[in-house]
Image 1 (cartoon, helix red, strand yellow):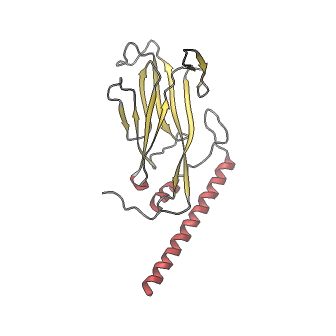
Image 2: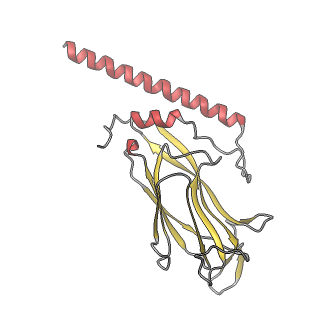
Image 3: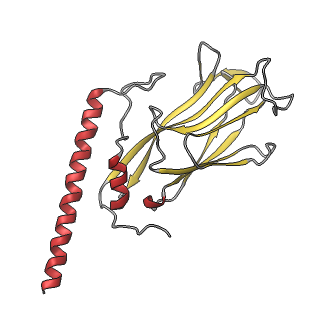
Length: 217
């Protein structure tokens, strides 16, 4: 049975940061048993919290649609970590769909991520160009990772309580490999959460008073 949807909170928005993208590394002498001979890289695509925190309290599942040459190209990940590891030789666009928990009563979001295996991109003429969205670690791992925020506009009261029970709308203080957050931004975010909670409590109290007046009239 679907959960009862509560009243939406007007003029309020809640943000939750996520990281999405992929990592890739050349296959060495030790290869996965099921890797085709022509495959040259091991790669992982993911949706995760900026500090690897559990985001399943608002994300129900993630669907990755791979290139049609892969067996069962539609892969559904229903439990964290929301990631998929495969082998391959070529770069292609992966369709990513994020579905939210039932309490949210929100539509899923869909976007594309270009799988990156190399520290460069190819032009239309076949020229290798520096990859502006790509970094490479000392171990040779290629990373194409992006920061984004999921914005819930006017969430319902039940879902708002779930969101507030797990702080997570923190903005990064700077772009670092470990995504470190500043204490100042954390304090500011906590203050905003407290203000939002006070606003919700006030709206609920006003609604109770209106209902009480309606009953006595």
